Image (tube, rainbow, N blue to C red; front, side):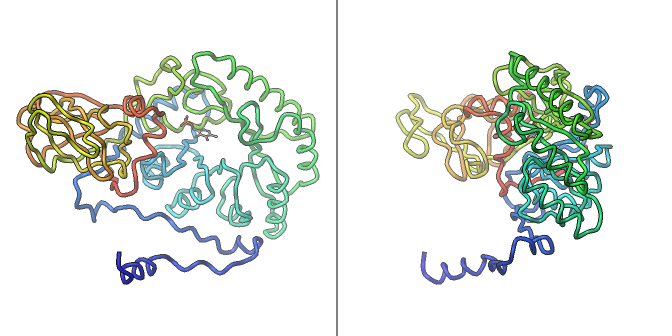
Length: 419
Ligand SMILES: *Cc1c(COP(=O)(O)O)cnc(C)c1O
């Protein structure tokens, strides 16, 4: 790259914000959002189609199985890669009463998108911006003395009490007040009447496991924590613990449930647990499709792609698709996964490269330039009908469907469909 190109690249980097003290941050939190290819600018045929009707359908399925609890869908990581603002607007109109995200930035994005329902920030990092949290009616999760101090300062500055949900660590060992620290934290809260603990929550480590003992143990500890906090005068109006797997199996539904993956129509199964009831009713929301951009015939002994990982012993028809690992098609699928063409499965052959992959279409007659291919989701084609689920892709890639969904990168434009 020549030096002029380097300079031009440098110009694109936004100037660093002036440094400021943490306490000033509340006035001016500025969140730089990652730019993603907009549908209107899309030239490439690779796109993720997001089916909004399926999203609403899944919300209904979850509501029916929530045991009377309110449903606060989890829209962290850009709504599991589906585009959080569009997903939140659709679900809010369909009756979702609140939302959960991991980051303050994600909550701000939902507010900027016009979402009015409560937004719970589960990650617990607020960068000192507690006034912004309160002013934008974002509900923070707290579990540390610094959270209480920050909220007390914000409450005094704003002249009104502030609301928070308290998180207890019942066995996940990730975030939350440890069981042994409950009384100490409760006393701290008693000395901070400005902070109103309106919710009590925990997170389950193995809600999808075949063996349910770990979940019942966590629920027992959560009940114990509820009682010990009540003895200190802390009696939150709502409690919540259930992710998708827990709620679909009827565990820990309490007053609110926090489904993520189920809302996007994917079965919450990571640890080889049995299929959760009702997951067959869920409909997958995202479909990733592209088109064949080149087709060729290779002879026996020729190789395909980087490293020549595929070397057939017979003549083969090879099609190239413009989907690579930089789009979220895991390189682990090299020589392993499948895509759909004309409604049939074609094996991925050779190494997946950054921008492209090759598929073997020898057994699928009639594949030509511009033919639609599907990497994730269903296809109805001239030769049949089939579907590739996130769980299938995850199994091939040695990971879980959550990672598959959140890996679809920003250069894949999202198209929202209202069928
Ligand atoms: C991600 C997350 C959820 C949702 O989990 P799913 O398995 O996708 O339903 C719920 N609660 C917390 C704290 C989370 O981090």
